[in-house]
Length: 239
Image 1 (cartoon, helix red, strand yellow):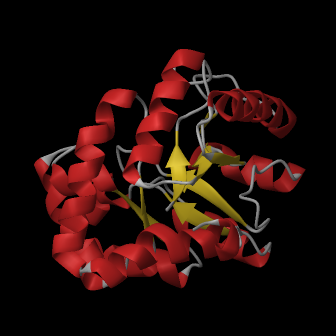
Image 2 (cartoon, rainbow, N blue to C red):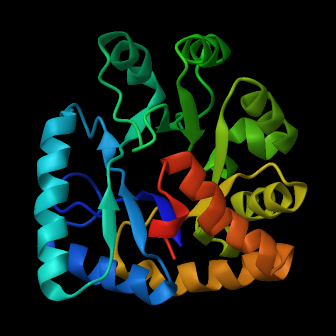
């Protein structure tokens, strides 16, 4: 499986706090069946923004450590861009894209969609960049009417849902909406959004719930085939 959204890099944001935490998280992801992970720290975190070069260095060091530990997990580039910084980063050419080059992870504020959100998505379309929207089941507008997700897709977005939301990992509304979204076929992929090693049980339950909701074939599509396409990871590299 391929994870498009994971806070695995140590000491960067509210995810893994140190190298030991990263190792434990990586081992747990491998135990679930993940073989490729896009490391997506918050960008910015607080008021601090790291460059793609800094993230590359951190990721390479973690990859070397996992390899030395015999943990068979391949790490890839990424970042969870807050929508408030996307316009500026796009103009400066500093979006941290997935390996594919024209897709990147973006989140809207959890308090509600910002003014001008459709204009932002239109400008990204014009630039040929395709946002992969994180945890859409958490947004108030989606919880009020999940069909607004279709408007995201019409503006060139791809849709992610957190596995843990399927089993109540955020709140009851998010759980209900996450289930409706995966049943509706509006979800392109599911992901871990893992922040700490203790989340492994909820992720396993989320995979079981997804299989029960949509079946094994759709589960494979949302955990392997679609993530491979969105990230730009050749399937032959992702058994």
